[in-house]
Image 1: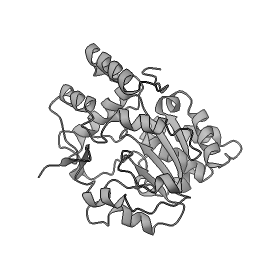
Image 2 (image 1 turned 90 degrees about the horizontal axis):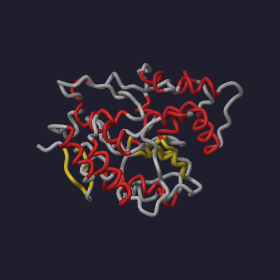
Image 3 (image 1 turned 120 degrees about the vertical axis):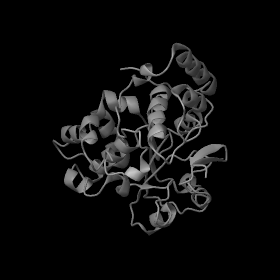
Length: 289
């Protein structure tokens, strides 16, 4: 059996079942939901931990009481032996913490009418591509590629998990001025996490207790989260990981790692495609810090 298929122009793993995609047409969104939306491997886990810590007022023991992927209901994937995520989410008390990588035309329809709080994290296309490449090569549930070049061509065509990076980022950039949407760049989190933490706290209206900002920044630093088993999912079943993979859910988190993979011509092609796809938009990303 194929491990994935294309639905509505987007490549999805089989764990993102037709039932899940169809359920998004009628999924009941609540106004007090808290959503993290990203293209795959663009900072979902990082932002989710920031929100968890802010929600609990900097009480890290409370924030990390359970594994992060259980705190935030991932609406895209069904777990073996469990009810589908939309059924489980419907049973959760408010406020619900939800996350998704679904593109705009496949996400929950009521998200546009109920207008819950949404944090979207965007990451530069080149680093995002490299991070997702390693994810594809590591997990059995995702299509693997014979080479970086094969994957690069698929990414350019929008034929990878998540679909088109360009379409998704442009959609949410165009919604950045909606009252219920906060657009955050991964590179800004790397440069000045404290400013982003403050921005997120103000967006939700959750004051940061005196003296807690620096502690939250330290706790939510990439290096700290990588060593935290509640955020860097080292407990993932070996059945999920390819036998030849040294899998790490949080791998490097660097800005500029793309230089170790992209050829000059590939980099220039992405720049040219970006100019075409994002024409008329003032959305820009940093490719090195």
